[in-house]
Amino acid sequence: MAGVLNLSSRLRKLLDPPDVPAKSPNALRFGVLGAARIAPIALITPAASHADVVVTTVASRDERKANEFAKKYKIPTVYHGSGCYQQLLDDPNIDAVYNPLPNGLHYEWTVKALNAGKHVLLEKPAANTSAEAQQMVDLAAQKGLVLLEAIHWIFHPAGQRVKEIVDSGELGKLKNIQASFALPKVPYGIIFFEDDIRFNYDLGGGATMDMGVYPLSAVRYFSSSDLSSVSSASAIGHVHDPARIDRAMRVHLVLQSSVEADVLIDFAMPGWGPFHIIPRMPKCDIHLELEGGAIDFYNFVAPTVYHSITVKPRGKKARVEKVYKFKDGPGQEWWATYRYQLEAFVDKVRGRTPQTWLAPDGPIKQMQWVESVYAAAEFPARPTSAYYQSSA
Image (tube, rainbow, N blue to C red; front, side, top):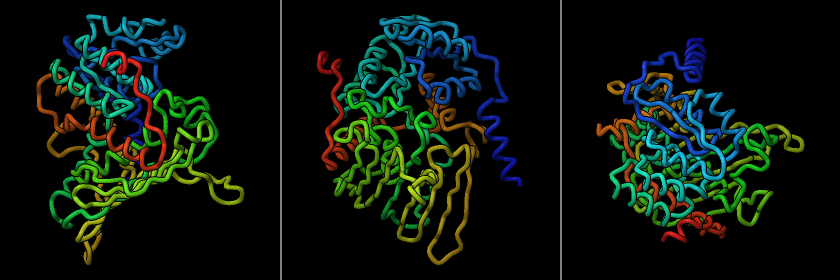
């Protein structure tokens, strides 16, 4: 019963933060590029409980959508029409930009934001290609601006606790990783729309580009190793574009540390039972095999809702850990991964040392891995941005 009550409390506070502090007079002013569905979860709600963040502006090419979004989330400044993104970047009353645009537009509007002197919180993956990611990282460093690819789950204390156990040597050397992120097949409109940008090749769609970033980033994070080779990759094409858009991907990776990893990604796992009509449960798990035991990390992408870390020392009794906040650090049990991420982003912008930060070359490595997976699966690489081609 206590567990159910704790879950209910976390969810209530997650959706409606109880602590809405008075905003700092010099709070970091965010503009949002596009009225994306992810923006409230990833920025607007987390910002409500951060005294040093205000979301002041949204830009959407669709006037009705822009105005409805701004009204719903109490955003005072709205830009719309064909030039709205550039208008937002030209606004001197914005310090930072959140870019949740389709993957294929990440490069152009992140580069333009950096050139406009704005810090950028960028949805994953950073770009369509590793070359684009490289230029974005280099430009941010040159400008002295913060660029963060939103691999949000790493900022939560649960994932960091697993990393701590792996690195402690308690269970010996890491040998193998199994990482899964897969959703059940359900009617359009529940998770994805039929015309979802994730199914659009020209916009950088595909399961590996979208959900796949999470398990691939988990392999990178827990192994602290780069990729040696993709020994096998098997894709299932999406019905909308089966030759170019992957609905699912199974991958076997060999890392430079000799750790091996199996990754499963799926937009729409078929159901089971008669005619496959019974939906399967989502998979969002990490299994780590070490010389002296194993660790199972359940629900690594959304640990605030619920998670478990099961540590299984060989020959000894297993234990289960749950970590919703740091012992000595920022946070509350109800903070989402995105809220921990926002805390780190603001600390970095303000010149403080974040509790957690990601390696500057992370976006480049991430896209190199994605490109290697697609090549091994004999799927085409995602198209290079026309803006990259014109400005390179």
